[in-house]
Image (cartoon, rainbow, N blue to C red; front, side, top):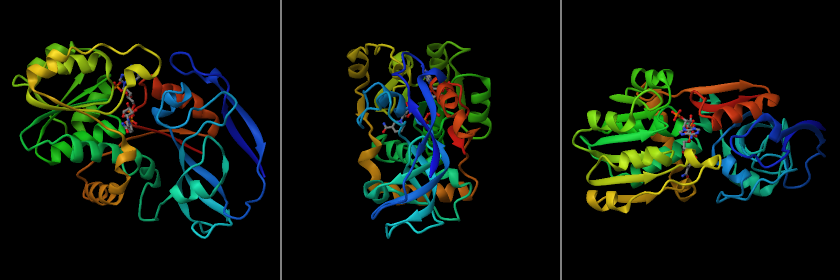
Length: 331
Ligand SMILES: NC(=O)c1ccc[n+]([C@@H]2O[C@H](COP(=O)([O-])OP(=O)(O)OC[C@H]3O[C@@H](n4cnc5c(N)ncnc54)[C@H](OP(=O)(O)O)[C@@H]3O)[C@@H](O)[C@H]2O)c1
């Protein structure tokens, strides 16, 4: 079968651009025993891919000449594996391709997507890996209580917006940090946060002092860099910090030094989050977040690009912080 695919042309320097990727054709054989041939319906664009392209991620590096890895929503066309029936829909590690031949390992790790899930792309966002990241970080690591002031950065993305809404539902006072008026309007208007700081327009330190005068009880950090420093300067005694992501560093910027005195002064607890440690909670996460979505208590936002060829530019927009919600490509 003739398919389209995207390879990494060169390791990106700084923010990725379209020139870092190459669009091409390939031929796939019919599935052999234990394999399945799938059509890719939608691709999930996730920040960790940038780290993998630099060889800095926990998962294997993505090297020049290789098809870019990544999860997608796929439909089974032909199968020689008992788990994947033709016609069914799954989330699987398909890579940036129009079609993929999944091997037994990829099939074992694939997750079924039933017709009740609408839109099905939720399985890549708030009911997928980013949703589990938010749920596990909030439920298992943040130790948040009703009345706590919780601050979350990258607040309009699938991780940040879900953390903030779970916190709001748990009775916390929730302050988002996001770049630009459109993101902040969605965060307070749709996602129901108590406040959102547009750190492009407002001095972050001043805003934190104004909005959290008693200090920040929980900080869920999706970005690192100076935003992490600024929040650490405003911690309440006994604060919990969940370190989840490093958006400020993925494109190559040097880490910002954090004064340990800020942590000591606040008697703070700092915990690192790796979503892979929490796969056992996946069913509990989808049951809980799914119920919130169905009841209209939890909002989500998708940033959809169309066509495989749009994937490199959509990925560059994500890594530039210009996405408005979960970054997806619908094929
Ligand atoms: N630890 C884990 O296991 C795990 C798992 C999944 C995701 N994560 C992390 O969680 C974070 C959020 O992921 P997501 O999928 O929900 O992404 P996202 O929020 O949709 O997109 C990333 C956002 O980061 C913000 N950002 C802040 N500083 C930036 C910078 N210097 N350059 C570019 N963007 C910047 C931008 O929003 P603003 O303009 O609003 O700042 C951008 O929209 C990421 O750091 C990701 O790597 C971690």
